[in-house]
Length: 337
Image (tube, rainbow, N blue to C red):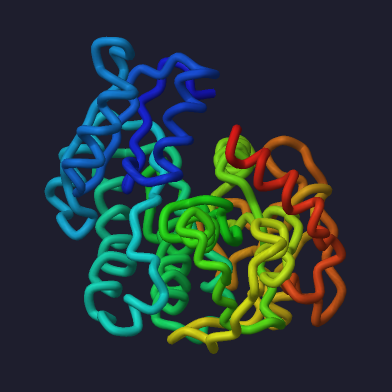
């Protein structure tokens, strides 16, 4: 569905953007593939790998999602948008709340308005497990962002634009995540790995799995859904053991805003949650005035079923946990994907 289409990704010079561009160029022949981000160095480095001379569809726009006028200009003629730009470091957001709000909430609204003005066909916003029952500023801003994108389907009016959200867990090896941090300490031969809490669990997904899930949901979406993949969980102590079995694990205490476990489908949303073979869908809490409010079957004909009352998709209660050996193989897969 992406052949001869124009696609824009905000925050496109980040980890997800790199993998997304690599995947699109390998599988499709887009008309334009626009990387929109504010980091000129990352764009420069990315352009060495995906140059517009080798790939004539590539475009690089320096811009901030806080700048609605620049976004509106960048989205002219665009068919599909992935909104990946965000401030996402949990402790940094606790210390700099307004900066996180400006990017994650005001930026989301700017993406919505620019997409409507440009008559973009479909928009998918990337979310996080931290947006479900949030206790930190980052999660709260992403919950607000999710609500904006869901409600945007109502304010679209006669516009063709439809908006959906994809929510998933920790991405193995992404910038700023625990795996590169542990690798750095291992390379320095520190002899120990810091563990914030030995009970801690996380959902675990590779970048490629995240990209593939987003691409598939462009085909599935009606507009207004929050898509959640079925993915395994890990215990942080098992991750440390898998990466450095001979290192001591030192408990250092929970960081500002950090949770012991993560949730992707809250129990309070169980009456809105549909289970499909490989994912969940959280339906909107509101009714849309000008479109079908049925989300099963979806656009691919996949049939979902209502989950049990009070069901929650919880990283500490997941049916699928990776063992230490599983984590080793999983991380290797992520590294070479």
